[in-house]
Length: 170
Image 1: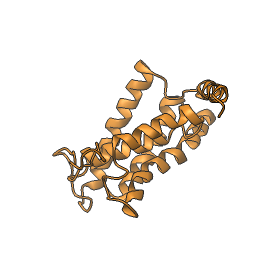
Image 2: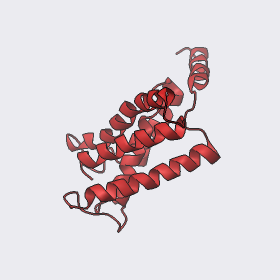
Image 3: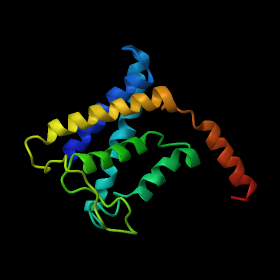
Image 4: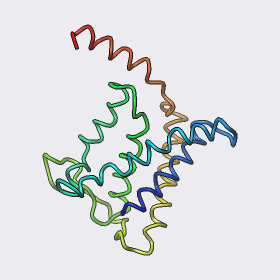
């Protein structure tokens, strides 16, 4: 997908996740949506920084990079929702694009994709983006409802990590 598709995906995800995390159409929902929109959009755009350096769809489109963004809120206590943007960027490139991404870079440059994708210049690219976003929102709803809440308070984990680091002399 192109940048436009990734931004569309991120904005629709932020709106949907705002309602999933804080159900209703009130000030609390609007506040939650506003709170998560910028981190999700930034996360959705981050992997394409590798167009300026490295190798596109390899350097920053891999599971190790996603792992860094998943760990960041636990270790540092910020960027809680950026990983969602990064993860959904990968999903959009794997499922929505013909080319795929190198999930295991730097160990392997093999690109993984699905036959469901379209070219980034296709007239169907926006439709594919919206369909994939709907599926992602359904998955996030199920995770939030049945597995783990997506509005995690990572402050306790951050304090524990800070205390552990202080105990080690950092």
